[in-house]
Length: 251
Length: 218
Ligand SMILES: [Fe+2]
Image (cartoon, rainbow over the protein chains, first blue to last red):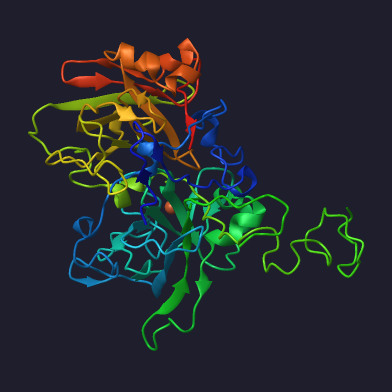
């Protein structure tokens, strides 16, 4: 799908417009209970930027960004990571339901004890010599992705008294256009830590379930790994605006 | 109308398309084709370097390319302190104004080694992207946009990326005609214009404060 045509009319271009979710269904940049947003989230209202060529294009990234073994985080430095082995899989779609093939998916996460392999993370949980927490995959022609990892542990942080992050995996995605770029976090179902986590609760209530994977018995491998499904939806290009005329002709 | 009205009521008044006797009833659509709701964003957090570090991240163009420049700047918070744990990503056209992307209707960039995309962590608050100065880009309506680079800023404390643009101080004429800059006040424009340096251009990003950078809703 390119959706882009040139009329040859002195540089007039028919460009796709990427639909934006209503503000009430998007995560706000700032959320007071997440204290770090206080000095970092911009305070002024952002200026609307119509989608032109720069916004409807974006980096073309693919298999050249992925090394062998990047899709299996449980094998590092010649040994097996500690923890509950899981397969995380799903599809990357746009909001029209079209698969997004060839999309680069980058993930990072804490180990089974809730510790990141990062110089800033020094809380007293053990590092795992066979886990670095980095994974990369590219979606196939149907927009599917899958990687094998271990379930990350919860970890404490300093946001408020006795604050713990629910188990989560960080996801970074490129679609086809600058406008589709998203970085987010995937959670696991029924985590008792959701209620006190301001990063989870910054998501508007009606949209929170979209950040939570579902357990999938069909993709659970006997004697090997639990399956968790998480579909990711990027903004779609609205080529054919829906007719709002009240004539019933919606085909 | 009350949402408690029975769906079997026949005297529909047109404000509820789902009721019998209204035009849309029977089309199969409730109030338009179904769209999948998008996945909500979340902060990159403090450990983004684990997942988002590329050895060649800063290289929007291959090292050694003729005309290469460095686009640099410091990211600061509302106290004026540097943001040492963030990331800046850039996306731009080549010197001919073309994008390294198949959706560019004029054809993809033919500049060798040009990716058009850079990714830089902000150690000490500073980002640095190796690139080429972009050319002017059509605005799609018969006019031109001044040379510019789209930037995304990610950091702990930002629940979504924030987006801004870099323009160039030595493009005064093109800047004056740019459709985006034209919609801004003089003070706002000043936050987007990079100044020449020894090896390229510099634009600092102020997430908050009196000099808060203009950020865009895309
Ligand atoms: Fe995290």
